[in-house]
Image 1 (cartoon, rainbow, N blue to C red):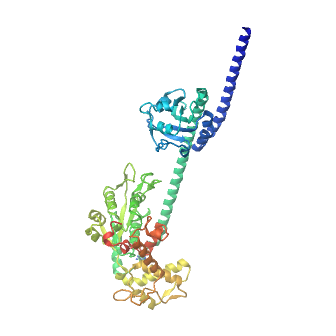
Image 2 (image 1 turned 90 degrees about the vertical axis):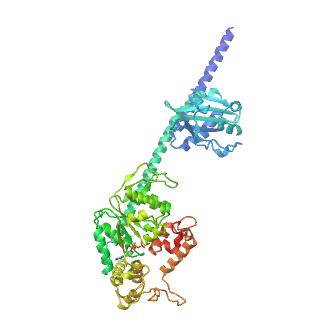
Length: 552
Ligand SMILES: Nc1ncnc2c1ncn2[C@@H]1O[C@H](COP(=O)(O)OP(=O)(O)OP(=O)(O)O)[C@@H](O)[C@H]1O
């Protein structure tokens, strides 16, 4: 009897010792895993801890860690085993599903329980209304599932599921350790989420910084260009009429519609109006309606909120907002797609804009100057331009004369450009001989002042000596302005480039950007192609048949 008492005392001691050892072991594990969790800053750190340490420790093969969403009604996988390693006969992977209901008969039960729960899957699927993911796991050969609630203090964050391919893999003896680790995971997850938020905010700040830098560059560029446009030259009666109109309209807030052939100085006139207006302290903002795909014009004009459409990675301030209390030049207004015409009209009427994806309207005070080389009246008759928008823009029309109609200004302009470009390249200013000037006077100037300017720039660069004796102009029939049939026509590189771009544009059905656009064929960024086209005076009507213009 005594011996028995002694034996049971020994065995009691051994049990106590065993329990003590187990507790010490658990504490060592808790300490080890706990310090790894405390050091975790990124999601992948936690993924590594669960995948490499916890699965083995508790006898699981796969796991999913789901967090309750802000709505409190759904949960979403936050971390899970590598999906490629899970082979299930159900094609539909529950892991990739974004939202699962909390009240699914399993999740809600497990988060309400103080202890971890073990489920036998074969038994579970005999019940009705079992969530789809249980079938998925069953089909992947899962026999048992262990669930433990994840909390941070009093806040229930979610649930950790362990899955085992063998029966009786999980044991309640590990519950104390598992609960301890789950608590640490709760804190670890909160840290990682806070860190992710900080990184996201930093990224956002960097993007804003980048955007501000871009806007700053744009403004600096506009400022630089405005220096070039400060003077409209000409003494002809035609240009004097324009001066009078500009000086009359400039001080007001009236909308101005500038028309005239390409290169006649519409943008220059717009800058002159702005510079002579009370808004001149602010920069004039310009949007070229033809130089970008129609779907981008809206966001260029009105801006967009981050994520408002695919590709809207950032919030963007539109030109209307940038031009607040200043002037907005809508260049090539005749190219504006009909749908955008309606939106522009609304803004002009309401004087408020709404960013794409924005929640409210923003009041703006913008003076509009529109420019076009199309005959807008004809465009209205052809149904390509809204009559109501035309009347709203045509408050104060100013037509810039073609160079043909102000030939007497050619010597003044040619001398001015020769001076400017010689100074630019550090050469002495060349004089233009009367004979050379005569050839300029005889030419038809389809590209107007821009063409004259480019010719002089080229000539100044190539010219040696103190005088320009000759200009290399396309050979034209003086009366008809047509090129002579000489078999071979010497063309400037710029003309060849112009023709070649036009050919490619026609080949691409007038498309500039996009996979089938001319920019791709020419291996150029579409913005570069658009600015080349602008420099070369290439207009839409040069490469799109009139009946196609509004569909392009
Ligand atoms: N009267 C002028 N005096 C001096 N330079 C001028 C004059 N008119 C135009 N220019 C010059 O000619 C070039 C073309 O002018 P601008 O860009 O204003 O023409 P545009 O009519 O707006 O052309 P587009 O319709 O092709 O946009 C510019 O470099 C400008 O400096």
